[in-house]
Structures are given as structure tokens and as C-alpha cells.
Picture 1: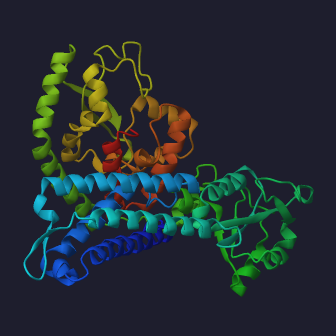
Picture 2 (picture 1 turned 180 degrees about the horizontal axis):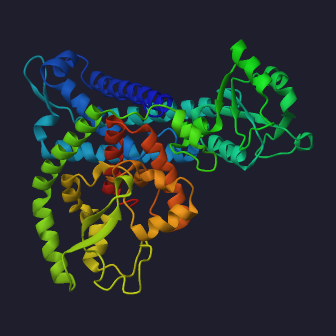
Length: 471
């Protein structure tokens, strides 16, 4: 399971809040119709309306990233996000009920027709809002409390150790607490790195673990030769007093990406979890083909209208074909709807910008809603791409980035995708630094690839398309 501890917490959050919303609706129904409560609930479809309300509310919460527990937000931001989400849920439910008036009808024990709308939805939403705010603020406070959560001691005081600490401290809701750093240079003791700072040296590791009541020791040393406190770590391991892990593992779990700066080839080689059998590849290929066939059938009218709009809007071909690098470095021709002028690259290859002035009027729209990507269903049908994977890049840029960024070529170990973990986790980018950030997400995906992970990425992609974010 990818990021299993975070997924478990997310699942728990969803289940608890399902219970809260259902309880709010049932309580509202009881307050409004106490004498006919059971009849309206079980005999007149009240239970189905309750489940519909719960589903709509939680789907809106998901769209507002309220189930992304790794997202950093203040209590004020959390409060307003909940209020906005509940308000939009009210609007959506109101539209559903207005379009299907029978959804609002119920009957008493005597067969008298009554309206659920007589106070039940309003009271239910007020209760839901109150319960959600109290529950979420309480959880946020508990998880962010400095005296609660898992206490972490970082062995190392270099840039990678500081970066890891910053990432952990940005996500206090995950329940991790940095108690300090351990350095191999006594002169660094007392120096503040991120607050807290360096609290001791390697020889004091065992004493520091005892004094600070440490639950987890995280090792972040770029060069361990002669600096790793082997004997002390071994003693802690044999005593079973604390969890000991590499900084790469914690960084990966917290951020959903693999740090290139911390990464050593041995981490990928010996980490496990990346064995893909022939059966797995066949299942993945079958799933891709099934979705492609369905996608082509459903999108055909859209593609025909898009082709007509492109021809009317600007001179040039409807489709844009370009060489890209695929699995194992093999090149293939990607197919997209043309969204730029025909002479867009008359001066040679350049990075595409978010608001590129070479984009046509129709091109701006189809890029925003991702319609320009639809012809790539043909690439998936051919087996050149998958629905989920690292985005394929042009050979010109691949050659440059391979020389500038360590491990860049490793992203070609799997089929490129129409969408991917980097696309849903990182905004649109057009620079070497952006390529580095996206590579870290791509490496994480390659290491943890699974059908369940692919499904999760497709769900997040749908949300991004819906809101017109990212690229």
C-alpha cells in the first residue's frame, strides 16, 4: 500500500465523518418528525436520501482537499474550507432535490404526504457544519500539539537533514515532532537549524534518546563512512526501544516523492515493493485497453467538434505530432490536438509556458480542459503509453536533463502516461528546477507503482481537470 500510514488515517477520517454526517441527518429527521421517524426512514426511502447526502458532502470535501491530510493549512484556513465545502454541498443537494421533487417527499404512518424540505435539510446542514468544524479543529489541535505525536531525532545536520525537518514541520497534522539534530561536530551543538537545533553529538546518541523520550531515530548522512554511530544505533535496535530508519524513507512517506539529493542507488535496489510480474503487466495492459475503448467511444463527438474548431480558428493541421521518449528510452510519435500556431517552433525547441503567447484561442481552451490530450488514447492503444505514468518528454530536453539531473534516465523504466503522480502533485513547470521536482515524484511512482495507486492518481486527475488546475 502506498504511504500506508497516511492512507489509513485518511480512511479513518472518511469513516468517522461519514458517521458524523449520517448522524446529523438522522437527528434532524427525528427532531422534525419524531412520531413518524421510523416510517419515513425505512419505509419511505429516508435512508437512501441520507446516504445520498453523505456521499455528496464527502465528495465536496474531497474536492476541497479536506481529505488530503498531508496538505498544510492553518486552523483559520481549515475553518473557511469547511464552511465553503458545506455551503457548496447545500447548493448541490438543493439542485438535486429541485430536479427530482419526489426526493423531498415523505409519508407519515397515516399515509399523509409531507415534505422533507420542511426544516430537515437546513437543520441537517447546520448540524453537519457544527460537527465538522468542532471535529476537525479538535483533530487539528491534537495532531499539532507539541507534546503529542511521535518524537523524532535526526542523526545528521547537513542540508538534507534540514530539508527533511522543514518538510515534516510543514505537515504537523501527521503527528511527527522533531526534537533535535545530532551532529558529528561538537562545534555545532546549540546551533539552531530549524528550531530545535543541534542538541548533541554522535557519542551521546543513546543518552539523547533517553532524555528526549525519542520514538524514532532518522539517519540523514550523505557520507556515512566514519560518521555513522554504528554501535549506538545497533544497541538501540537490539533493545527495541526506538524505530530506526533512513531519512529517505521518512521523506518519501511524508512528501510522496523521493529526494534526489538524499537518494543513493542502493535505496532503490534494496527497497523492495517494485517487482512487477508478467501477470501484473497483462492486467495493467488489459485495464488500459478497456478504458481506451470506452474513452474513444465517449469522446468521439468532443474530438470531432474540437477538430472543426481548430480548423476554423487558425491555419494548419488539426493534429500535432512530436517525437517523445518512452519506456527504456525508445522514441515514439505522440499525437495531440494542435493548440499552438503552426510556426510555434520556427526558432527551435523551447519550454512551453503556462500562458504561452504561441497558443491559439481554441488552443487555450482545449489545453485548460485537457481536450488536447485526447488523441493520446491512440498512443495508449498502440502500447506506447499508459494512462498513468511519467509524462513523456522530447529527446532534445531529455538529453539536456539527463546531464543536469541525477537519476533522470530512471523515469524511463516504465511506460509514460497521459497523467501521472508528478502531474497531480506539482503545478505546471517549464524549467530545470521544475523538472527536478517532477522527477522526484516520478521516482516515487515508479518505486510504488500498483493498480490501486493508478486508480488514486486517476481520481486526483479528475479533480484537477474539474477545477482547471495544474498540467
